[in-house]
Length: 410
Image 1 (cartoon, rainbow, N blue to C red):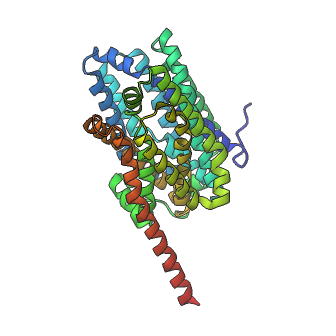
Image 2 (image 1 turned 180 degrees about the vertical axis):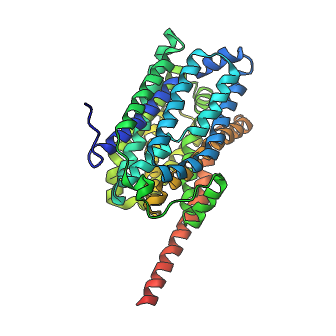
Image 3 (image 1 turned 120 degrees about the horizontal axis):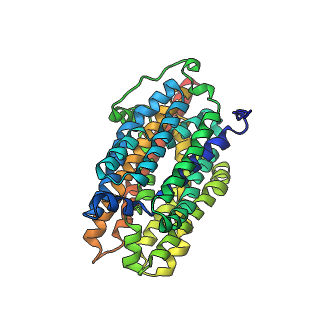
């Protein structure tokens, strides 16, 4: 009989494996998605339809995530992780075998309403991790997404050449493994309602969760977190177009750059996040990550030399060190009864960045491609220039207030 995984030993690893299964499964489906939607839409306006489905998913998910996070604080993590993975598996099978556009769009909406995999795993991991170890473990969690980005598209692209539905059948199988693992991970005491001394009130208005971030004193950090995710998501719809037009990269070369970025990102999250956090602390690690990312994006915007792109992928991926550092900083600022609400609210911030970044960068590129082709990559740099001073000023004021309070008590 299969034994449950001890929470103190293997539960964090199991959660990272679940995230890896989910990210790999999703990444497998990416190469063939345009063909799937073209088959359902008859090839008409596929670019518009394809982009619209991504926007719909991001917006719906942004609206749903805060409520899902709060509900997981009250009722535990497992039910919502199981629901998210189950709907994802069903969507993969529908994409594979139901060539009806209306059905695909409806399942995109349903998937957006129930997709809380990343937020739930992050909250569950925070439940079972001491505060001083969260940056490193969040780094391992983020590395699982890099692994998915590295291996998923390669597998999906090869399989789709033989059978269009094959990547989706395999993706459903891989996500199913994550579903099974979810049933084996024991619930953390902090995530069970009967163990909580204070129950978080369920709020279904996502904008109230954004206000809650402000009332919890997390607004400055959340703004930087938005900027980091804006930068990370800005290449989603632009990278292939930009590198093909600016540097004449072929599709295979573009695929190679994406695979290398996924590899560098994984190495950064696994091997560099922990040491950097231990040496410099989460605050300095976040600042270093943002600084490296801003410099890398500026170089990308200004360079006209194709070969520079390849070594530039390393610092671009290294900038992602800011992501787990910011997560850890914010998770330390709330108690165990609100970790799900925090991760849900932060996932809403990520969803907002996911919806806004590709649209904003593509629009700017369309307007400036003939005159200043790299201008779109300066958008994340501009966001950093606005959000980082806000955080630093707020941080200094907080330090001054604590010092004044200590002097008064003395």
